[in-house]
Image (spheres, rainbow, N blue to C red):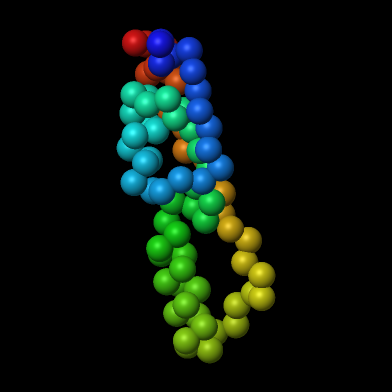
Length: 77
């Protein structure tokens, strides 16, 4: 099997997979980090607003961060 001929894309993935995907060494060629790559910071900021009585929106849209394999690096192999 030639890994360069395949690409697997996911809708969301554990952040620990970011180095695997961006290394271009894995069949995963990209995914969308639902909630962004700094979900821990965003969650903390939101909870802090709630606890401090600061006004915040009822609906918070998740940030979507695309994480891709560097196709230039892949092509150079």
